[in-house]
Image 1 (tube, rainbow, N blue to C red):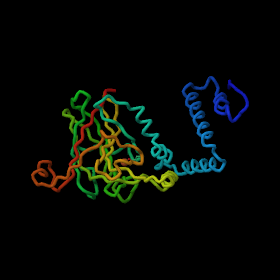
Image 2: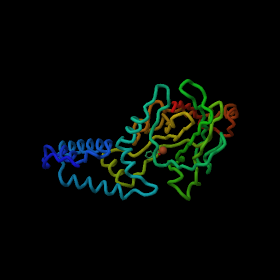
Image 3: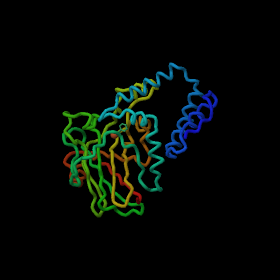
Image 4: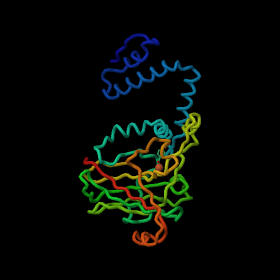
Length: 291
Ligand code: BEZ
Ligand code: FE
């Protein structure tokens, strides 16, 4: 049975609405809705929202919904640019010191990327500046993790993922799944990533423009690293010299996720790494926590 606490008044609005929630409602749902109503009503009161402003908000949310389809999730994008995605990530992925930190998944992960031999080149169209990425997957005591699965993906040198350029980039361009052996090392080739705009042709892009915010993410590589007995890690590594490193549109940058991108062009160093052309050398280790 719903608990009615009286008629709706400006003063008691939140309590009256929350009071209608039935006592036998799932307790977590009841808590979530009570807190949401409390804060929404407080915001409307603090702002003294006009009817026009309220309707602008309704139109914005309607358009956000209409922009969503199988490939586009404008509500997640909204959550990303408001910092809500990173806050949920932070709360749910608190790590002991020394463990690798997580960051946003983003909308461009593809579940069935091919499993490749360690060292493979994930760039299928030979466009961009060559890059060799390597490192180790370790546990919190510094021991290598055997059999860790690395699912990696990146945008091309023009800032687009393969799924954004179907028919222009080969399917599964700049994606791959790798598995470590007993020494925990990983290495693969790709191309130096570049900063890119998050999808800006919808209501979220318009909102950013209205707020005087840009829609760029600094250059990064995506990783999902999983291994039996360890908590799965969804993260990126970033280029610290990127022009947008201090103003990521989705707040995904963390100090510990900066990698180094060293340009290698002397023939001996190239040969030592099995590279035939100058390349960016990126080295980054990841530390997993027990499940
Ligand atoms: C990405 O890095 O792929 C991404 C993350 C959040 C929003 C848009 C793109
Ligand atoms: Fe990305």
